[in-house]
Structure formats: C-alpha cells, structure tokens
Length: 77
Image 1 (cartoon, rainbow, N blue to C red):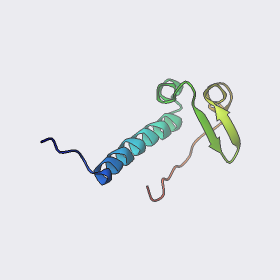
Image 2: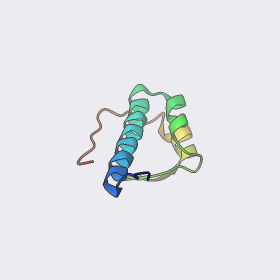
Image 3: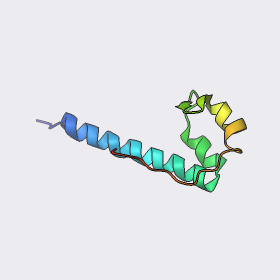
Image 4: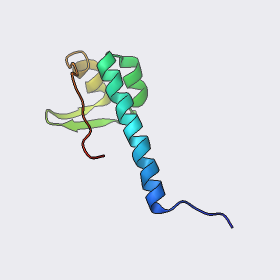
C-alpha cells in the first residue's frame, strides 16, 4: 500500500515553495533584474498592494523602473 503525505506535510511543503518563490521575486527587485522578475510572474499576474492593483504589464512597463526595494521582511510565514 502506498502512503500519502498528510495534509500537514502538504501544507508545509506548499509553504516552503511559496516562500522560495517570494524570496526569488524579492531578489529580482533588489538586483533590478527585470528578466528574472518576468520569469517569475504568470501571464495573468495581478498584484494588489497599498498603492493599488497592478497587472504584469503595469509592473514591467511602469512600476519596475520607479521602485527601488531597500528592505523586505516576511512576518510569521
């Protein structure tokens, strides 16, 4: 009989994947590497933050060149 991972193990694995992706996204912002950021964003990507709602195209064409990330913290992942 094949043993399947528990829901807890699945959620822990998902958390690790999401944190790794978020750290990769932040790294692209810190390095101002639009190509790396582009590779991480889905074609239908939407970001909602304190400044509003932005599509992938908004991020690439308008926001990326204007925003400089100085620090980033993930609280209680």
